[in-house]
Image: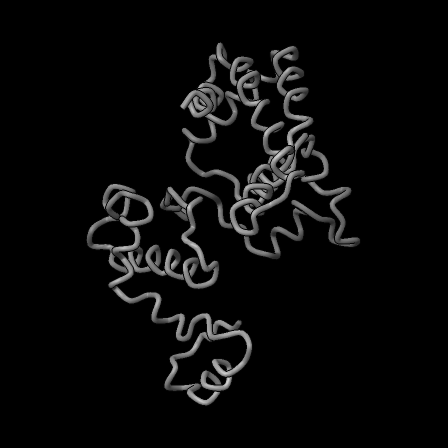
Length: 232
């Protein structure tokens, strides 16, 4: 199968040849995905209007982008993206923009000389127990917050865990055996997964209730928010 990022009229002979092969033409003219008609896919997929998910009614470009994303997944994945049930509007101003030279000089995630994690800021700070946690700490380092309230919220969680060693150790113990649930779900949804994937998923999900109970009485806003998400 092939997906061609050109209108059909610009590659008619290639499209005809592909359609005669054993595979087929999965899509042609991906620019067409940005047509206004695909905006309706947002409500069909998410169950909410663009305005309800935070997109201004007059921001037609952003609506087209969201519609194109859903249409692209439909074309390339061959199935409705059932796992896509929420769209969050990302504000570039939420995080500090760091150019490539500054990233390299600051050695945020790798050293200048050896291009290795060891010796970088990430290497110092990354004490995570899960793959998802490792990805999260890397994103936090590469995209530092700019809003004072968001910074204070994150710092309050750090202070609470730092001052309560027992709580921190209990959380780390519960997180340690957890598998990479994001990757497992991707395999299960798009390729069916296997018995090992389902077993790992079940074991990981079984750790959520005791983890929620552990952070139930925390005072910080960030940890309390996580508990509410677990409860929902």
